[in-house]
Image 1 (cartoon, one colour):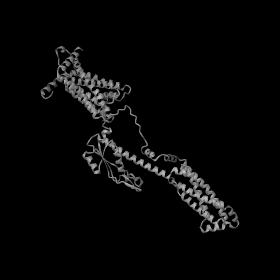
Image 2 (cartoon, rainbow, N blue to C red):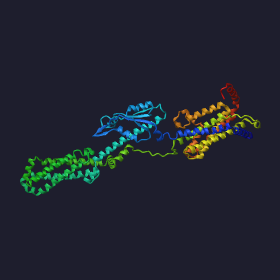
Image 3 (cartoon, rainbow, N blue to C red):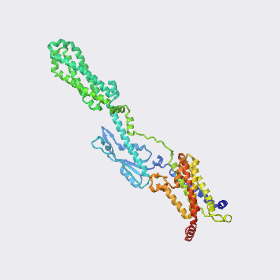
Image 4 (tube, rainbow, N blue to C red):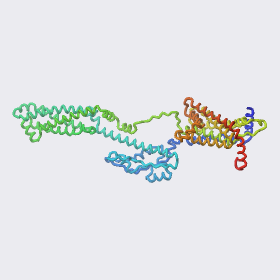
Length: 583
């Protein structure tokens, strides 16, 4: 143990008395943190609006639009107006489609959205016999950048969803406004006392049926007295005033029913079809009879003559009323049936809402509420564990490349054994590596300002990383020389490619998923992520325990495998010196 500390003290004195050595040690302590900081800053918020708004995407429209009932519609212009208010992408609205497409090929734009001349026409093609899906042509330059197409693809999807949502919303609102015009509940309530269409119709048709039964009886009586004029003149004179008043009232009632059936009931289809016209016909017939009664002034003979000259048929009018009562009976049966149907209940509830509200709901009926678990607001903070771990590995790699692992024997520890030399020199490596970790962590937390739920545990994880990484690379280099340094670089490359740092490990090839389980990066980043985003049970301590277990491998490499390789390393060193070009 004494020889171990003697070797360390000797190293410390030689570094302290050598200005160049001091500068190199300072440089070794700072270089890793710069690697981490620059990478975290460069990835701070690449998917935020401030960053994506710099990605230029061209938009152009050849849409000619259409005209419906003297109203012009141009969905292409509507899309452009909507995108002008969108700041998540750097939209560029070109004068021509050719300019937009050429800009994608030249690299001026990352992508382009082109709306053809029949875009609006195809949007309303469902009104015609043949439906055509409207298309927006999307051009993307995949050569310019590997990630940019993924961002612009999201912009393309957003535009598609915006167009679909706007179209559905407009369509539903239009239908609701038309329905509201056809079935104006306020008008119906004012005129009929009921805001429910079917209830109102049932009530009115029942009243009409009762009135028609009275008029049918009156016409029977009128036909009876008309057929026996000699014996019923006095009888007719007696009932004339009441009959005249009743038929005049019947004319007015039929006119009111005609207005009711014509007020906003087109959407009820066959139920209201023909009712308004039939009520109008009966009203006209009753009006003619009322005029004839008025002209006769109670004289039955004159009434018969007036009816004959006016070609008014009492029996025909009675038959019409009888037929109408049959129609009303059928309509009442259907209305009562409709009233109990679920579809009408849904329609009634829909019509009770505001068209704007229903249109907005139908365009996007489902909303997703996001509950973030272990939320980290910035992408840079999420990537800090990876870049910090990678920086500490690079720091250990630089150490073994600059500082010798082999101990030059001095008189006061010339009898030091190989394992004493190994640990004696490693103390210097350990202390510099810990300084690297401390500077890097302090910069992450207070210079870069990453989000971190547990700063102390973040530093502790970084300290363990520096210890494990540095010890492993020190052992590899002490055992195999330059070959060990090469092995350390290979291990780093494999871990960078397959540590699941940028993309989920599940998306990588199977071979990387297998290696992933044995990589120290996995457990180093796992512990740091726990410290940054939040702890789950004892996962942090499990990751640290597995990470520290790699020191066993380092001990085996540095103390056991190094023995048979010493002679080979000596031969390699002599060969390098003889080459005259290698250190």
